[in-house]
Image 1 (spheres, rainbow, N blue to C red):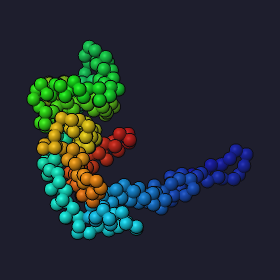
Image 2: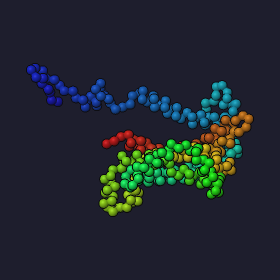
Image 3: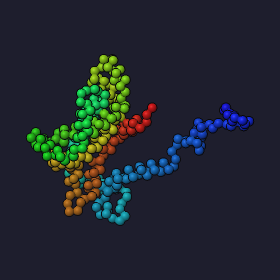
Image 4: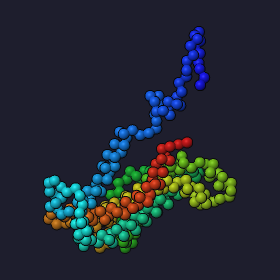
Length: 301
């Protein structure tokens, strides 16, 4: 290690080896390892996130009297099987789950595809009125959904779509939020050089979209797919207007559970658990892509 001699003195001063101190994790740097406080906070956050699901399982496996007892139960038991059977008898939950999978899946596929196409056009294609059209799209986000319920219901009634799944699917196949979200992502994540290279090779705009844009946009598409699926799965306002109890989605079917003078919370929780399982499966399937998209947006270089 070289020394530094101060002018007018004979003392050699050793320079500070910053890199070595960083490696040692001394006062001048950090070791790059999480401390015990970080792990404690992560454990507490995980417990708080999992507890609602765990309580749903516990409440769905007991009776109303046991849930209202003091202290309440904290462990599930085999009664959950009986409560699930009662929930399936009170409402067509099986058919509702299938309907919700069809509705949420169709809306998710349509929204991701259409919003990615529109986002690519607004981000990278030059055409007249692009800024005005984007402003109009974003402006629709400020219009309350309730304002369009009456004319929308009149339209599906004229089309004879009442109590049919397309009445729930088609009005929400594209979202202004999805278009804006994909546009903002592609502006920064998609280099213009890639598009120019594709055009030099003679690729059409559609070929460029499938071969270049989609691979780059995959993390954002996964995030948008998860958000769209959750929104469509949890939607209650429009499905309960357009559908009936004979052909419901999950949220409409759950609304009819445990009805009576005293609500049967255990049956409601058992039905809610059944309606939550597909969402957990989708999250497990898209979780890696979601984390990758978040990290790609947070880390540059």
